[in-house]
Length: 114
Image 1 (cartoon, helix red, strand yellow):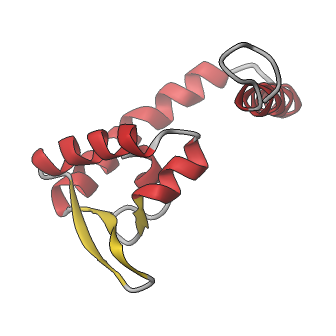
Image 2 (cartoon, helix red, strand yellow):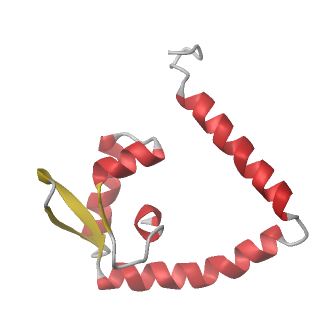
């Protein structure tokens, strides 16, 4: 649901494959999560005008309300967490994590570059 929420909640849809590519997840793991969210009434599938079989995933009204409630709680938490840390330090940490993720994604199961 976080991926859906990265854009204006309730006004954005995406395909499951776009979640996989963006987040480095397998299609099966995303499908399992999306199916569970659909069962809870938080997302719905919509026709994809760009692909016959790949449905788009969109937040429902219930999903949008839950997402917005979570973001109202998350903002003060994130503000407290980052208090006293200057912007350049936060950016350096973010850059480091991105670099590590990219390097880890390039390693095979043996720990060697694939």
